[in-house]
Length: 412
Image (cartoon, rainbow, N blue to C red):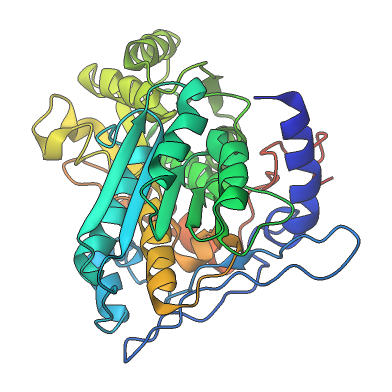
């Protein structure tokens, strides 16, 4: 990524998210949850304060009651729909999406955003929608222009790498509401929401599970691009979570230049297994999925990312090695898309930051499905998730750049 963009992102995000990411990941105030009656009140991001360098304070998604079991931390889109009280989109309402590099069936990030869009179209009675799948970074601007030419009411852009082009598009098209996943700016126009996540918490949960399962004392993570902060947060959160359970555990990690190279991910996993790892976390889209699939087929544990990869990468349990997929570190991209589309329909959509964390169930983990996860390991990972949710456990990772606190992070 461009160094200047990253520098600006890092400096300003530290100011804007100090409560969410610096030292204590869950200090941000939560906005009220949608009311399951006449008209819901979804999360609104506050307007920037009029200072010399205005920056919107992060608004967390609604925080449901703390679950008593992992499955209760996974709100379905059907449950979310019920909370909106049956509101319907006006005739002619249109939703478009532009993916990051990859397709809507990639099994992770793009697919989860697409599922949130489809869930919203079904819930709110939206008949007009379309998707453009991006083949390369050079296509971002053209894809956004093509999608905007259809004059949608909502345009979802998926991924950190689309942030600059999405900002330009939002400024050029004030009548279109933009929902940018993993996109931060110091200021947003009133028609642009940037959705952010505490991925370091998801990585921490995955690491705690990995250490609880490992018999060799060596675990690995196959990651995407190092210049994408959410990836760094996943990787370092994973190491922190593993060492929270076992301070002596060895954590192997590798970054990749592509999110769409499952063969490379598989090769990385095989290398780690050769070095003694018996658990592999995939935090890099289809590249990471290639890693956990190769690990599971070799009889090592795999942990997925973004959504429940039991249903995607492992075809609902029919793919070889499904019994070795222990879980997935979930970031509820689908809910973020769904809720912001609902806000547009309801007339409460405002530009700003929309943050999902363990505290509001935007960060959690998938059921164990066919995996023979011991009761002890299951209890340990749920204690970690609950501790992150209530603030009694912190990751030790900066929620801005993903570096460890005290080691030159932007939170220091």
